[in-house]
Length: 239
Ligand SMILES: NC(=O)C1=CN([C@@H]2O[C@H](COP(=O)(O)OP(=O)(O)OC[C@H]3O[C@@H](n4cnc5c(N)ncnc54)[C@H](OP(=O)(O)O)[C@@H]3O)[C@@H](O)[C@H]2O)C=CC1
Ligand SMILES: O=C(O)C1=N[C@H](C(=O)O)C[C@H](O)C1
Image (cartoon, helix red, strand yellow):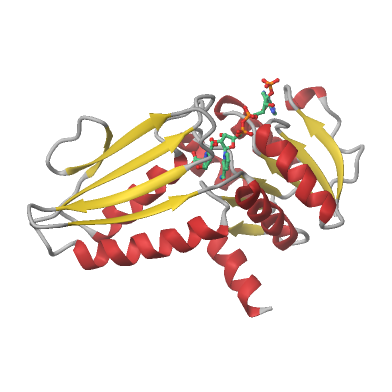
C-alpha cells in the first residue's frame, strides 16, 4: 500500500517504521502546507494525518477532494469534525478519526463506558479524569480524555459537561498534567468517602498508537464512508 504521511514528527516517524515493517511504502511526507505538494503524483492509497491542530482540517479535506482516504489521529481540531465528515460524504471519500488508535486504549474505552453505566446511579461517588503527557503536547486536555468524558456523559444524564480543572458540581473535571517523556497516561477515578475506584491506561511508547493507525489504514484502503476504530477492531477480530 502506498501511504502519504501528513505530519512527520514523533508519530509520523513511528508510523513510517511500522508501516515499512508491514510491507507498505511511504510515498509522500508532508510537514508544511499541503498546497505545496502535488497529491496526484505519488499514487497514494491512504493518507495518515498526525500533524498539528491548525493543519488537520485542511490536510484531511484536501485529501478527500483528491479522492484519497484518510486516517487521522491529530487532536485539538474537532470543532471542525462535522464539516470534515460532510466533505468526506460529498466527495464519496473514506475517513477514520480516533482520538487514540492504540488497541489497549480502545479496550479501555469499552471498560470506561461499561463502568460509567454501572456508576451512574451511585450518587455518593464523584468522577474525575486525569491525563499526563509529554511537555511538547500542543493541545489540552488530550483528545483521549475528551473521549472518556463524552462516554461518561452518554451514560450519566445528571452530568452536563466536562471542564479543564475547575469544574462545577454537574461537570466532570479533567486534570491535564505535562511531564518530560510521558507518551500518554489516562486515569478515570470514582471517589466516595468510603472507597475509590480507578482505571488507568499507561502507554509505554508510541508503538501502540502507530500500529493502530497503520491497521486502520489497511482497513480503509479501497473503501468509501466514515468508520471508527470499533469497525476496524471488529473486522480484525473476525479475521
Ligand atoms: N490518535 C492517536 O492515537 C494519537 C494522536 N496523537 C496526536 O497526533 C498529533 C501529532 O503528534 P506528534 O507526532 O507527537 O507531534 P509532532 O509535533 O512530533 O509532529 C507534528 C508534525 O506536524 C508537522 N506539521 C506542521 N505543520 C504541518 C502541516 N501544515 N501539515 C502537515 N504537517 C505539519 C510538524 O512539523 P514542524 O515540527 O516542522 O512544525 C511536526 O513534524 C497531535 O495532535 C497528537 O495529539 C499523538 C499520538 C497518538
Ligand atoms: O499528543 C500525544 O502524544 C497524544 N495525543 C493523543 C491525545 O490527545 O489523546 C493520544 C495519546 O494520548 C498521545
